[in-house]
Image 1 (cartoon, rainbow, N blue to C red):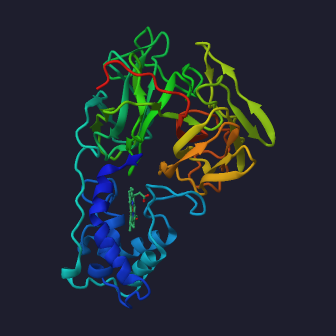
Image 2 (cartoon, rainbow, N blue to C red):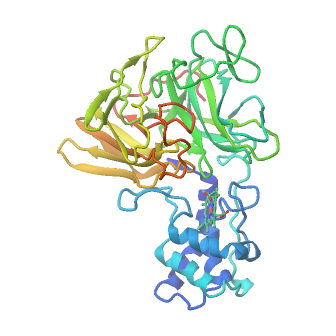
Image 3 (cartoon, helix red, strand yellow):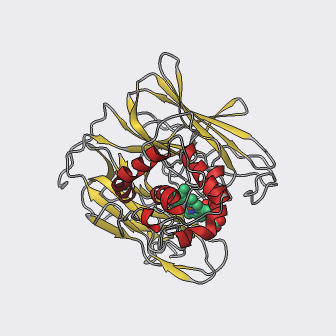
Length: 469
Ligand code: HEC
């Protein structure tokens, strides 16, 4: 899978330069590094994809005069490993979209700052990489737009849903998808799911679910809306966070856009002091080559698509099976047990038996403000355990996706295990209410445990679709 194409292309254009510089640096880091010769190449290659005008980071770092005022902050953030954002434990897994500085690069930045952050000879400053403006994947084949939303100036807005119909009359396979905020200054993060309209409800002109009395239907505490998470009826299409939002699937694989279903834009807005509007878009690229395998997204703990739906968790050493039959006769699968007040290191383990060979392409953790860490382990039929991804310091603000450098084949008879910890104590500075029992639900002050995987089932051949371009 190739992601973030725009960024990738510019990195590639930059590779030649990057390697010359790395070679020059090896062994003897010059005692007083300069911006032009030593630091600009590192910043241009690793930071300006986000830190440039009109992009997602708070400040632009495209020249000496822009970088200089931030020198100390830059040193601190690269030394602490907070920038560039990447949260996988380096001991496990290799990832094709990894963002990381080498030790030598970090040392160069440190030395540059500690020796006065000098400019050097502008003639040595490399050319700034160019970035694709607009859609990262180029012009999409089709664009879905949600109805315009008036973002209030103040207050906690939380997750807001907008429903957009899929007007295509037949199923289509997508080789790439991109979620693109209409107004990046107010969109904190979001996701789009493909799902059915809940029974008895309809959608008004603002994209809001309404009951038969035309009053907006609010999804509170997760209890009212009968949509099983990650079951056959609902699936995750794409997520947007800064630095993520474009997915291109491996050739011959793709995600299904099901005829007659709805696209639910689920967006976390942040008020910015003045009222503004947003109309986020979904760009899709139809598969141009026949798709043999459909890409699924599920979280560990839910069963894979060829099995009966169930959820299995271990909490406090005890097995909890949450087969909650709900209105439509379906089963809500990803709710977790409640987290007690003040629990500092509440642990949950989920397990999915692999009954058919699957291929895993990428993984990412989804938790809310109390989430601490998440680890995925594959136990192979011979008993060997492999940690596929470990995110030791989960950060709600950065829901990064980790794309395996090589897709991982998992044979039948294996087991997937995910382990997560939560801090519902006062020691967690993001905790909005340590004295509350926390429920599974959508808002960031509620909780979720979603150890996501994107995978294909080897034996499950996608049925050919009629009318696919
Ligand atoms: C994927 C996008 C992305 C990349 C790549 C990235 N940053 Fe950032 N950076 C951000 C965003 C968004 C913020 C603001 C939110 C935050 O602090 O987490 C930020 C914040 C910062 C801050 C703190 C600013 C403040 O207000 O204190 C510094 C310093 C920084 N970045 C430096 C860097 C450097 C140096 C690099 C490259 C080595 C880098 N960043 C790479 C997105 C990025």
